[in-house]
Image 1 (cartoon, rainbow, N blue to C red):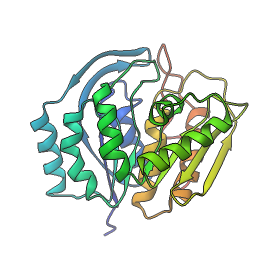
Image 2: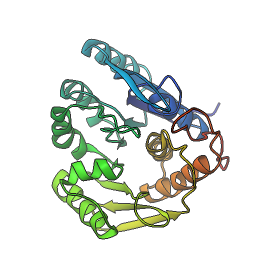
Image 3: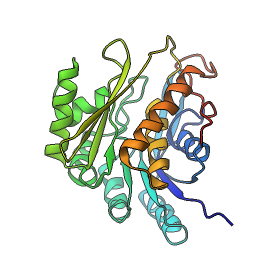
Length: 264
C-alpha cells in the first residue's frame, strides 16, 4: 500500500471554492498529496468580494490542531489567512516543529478587502516568518513586509533582500505579475541566491485564489521532498495553466482551474 505524503492548510474558508482552504485542498489533491485543514476564520466571500469574516474561537483552533497532530502529523504546513495575533500564538508551536512551512501572508484579498489586523501583521513578522521555509507574498503584501513601495523590478529585488535579511525566512518568492509585460516571479534565498520564472500574462479577470493555489502547490511538492527551486518551478507551470484554462465562473474575479495541470 502506498503511503501518501501529507500537507496541512491552516487558513480561512471560501464558500465559492476559489481561495482559502478550499483551494488548498484542491491543489494538494491534484498533486497527489493527502490534504488536511484547520479553519481559522469562516469567510463569506465569492468572486465579487468579501461580505463577512467570522474568526473561529481560539479553543476551537487549538482543538483542530491537536486533533491533526495527535493522529496524522503533516509532512508540510501551509498557512494562509490568520486574522489575529492570538491565533498566531496558538499556531506557533505547531509550525515550529514542522519540517516544511510555507507561509502565504494573506493580508489583503484580491478584491482589496483587508483580512488581518495590524497587530497580527506585526506578530506574523516577528514570530512566524522567521520559521518559514518559504514566504509567498504578492506585491501588496511584499510592500507591507519590506516597508517600501514596489514599482519596478529593482524594487522587487530590494524588497526580497530586505525580507530575507530583516525577517529571516529561508526563502521568499515575490509574485511580480503586476509589473512588466510578462508574469514574472522572483525567488530569493537566505544563501544570497536569486531565481526568476516567467510566463505570459493572459487577458482575463479570473484570477481569484491564485496566491492560495500557487503556495499550496509549492507546499505539496515540498511535502514530497522536492527542493524549493523545483517546487516553485512546477507551481509556476501549474498556476499558469490554471489561469489560462480558467472555468470562467462567477460575476467578478473568477477562480482558476485546479484540474488544468495533469503532469505527475
